Amino acid sequence: MRSGRLVALLLHLQNRRGGATAAELASELEVSVRTVYRDVAALQASGVPLWTETGPHGGIRLVEGWRTRLDGLTGDEAAALFLSGAPHAADALGLDTVLVAAQTKVLATLPADLRTRAGRVRQRFHLDAPGWFQRDEGVPHLTEIAGAVWTGHRLDLRYARRDREVARRLDPLGLVLKAGVWYLVARHRSDIRSYRVSRVVAASSRPDRFDRPDGFDLGAWWAHSNEDFARSLMRFDCVVRVSPSGLRALPRVFGPVVARDALDSAGPADPAGWVELRVRTESEEVAAGQLLMLGPDLEAVAPPSLRAMMAGIGAAIVTRHRGPAGPSQE
Image 1: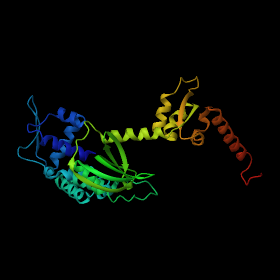
Image 2: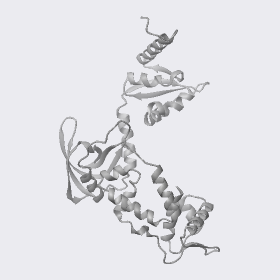
Image 3: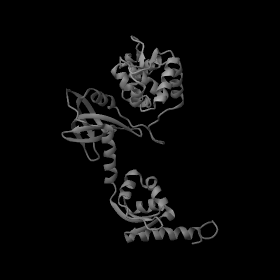
């Protein structure tokens, strides 16, 4: 949004005492030079003391000694801003009052025009992470776990698995909120895995700290872990032929991970554009149900049992729809 870009422009200039050229700012903000000049004009109109100078030593500068009050944010407040789109998440982590303080400071710092726009955004857009028809899980130990994540302290955990309760000493690396469900990503010895926070029976922070793995990226790890989990559920292999429009529908029918693996296995297209590919699903019954969603854009090739199942379902559909609608005549 433009308001966010204007704040970023302001902070860039504040942190560069000698100012910057429009080209440098355009590169840093990933916008055009013309956009930079429009943003500078907007800040000047809002009362920010910016001035520009042409020539080889020219550029865009803030009046010396002027600073935005955004420096008043504490570390916790700055971190809480990342949760501003999910206030229920901030509340669960014990950061609700910190988030309010951070937002208040940012709004007080913005020029009047930007402050009005920020208020409009907050009134009109809201992120609700939980899915429909789903209640938030009870997570009584989330605040203790979150504290260990923020401070980098080790964590003693008792965790209820499906078959038994286990004790773990963990290096807590991060928390993920997925569709209303909290997960702790943590290292146990050298193994990094996720733990559903609602299954935590007890949690206590330890006084000793740990060193985070070099280059660990929580978002990238989570995405990769989800893909591995999705693939682990796919135990049934089948071969199908799919039309060009069917190929485009694969991600919608099977999800991005299965669809991407299937497309990677595709052979050459025939003159009509149909290709043969391998698809992995949970079971033969699941495969038949999903393949039916592709309708006439799909032909099951192997195994023979799947082809027979699809033929049987197709014949039943034809029988059911032959003649006028009404009760069964069997």
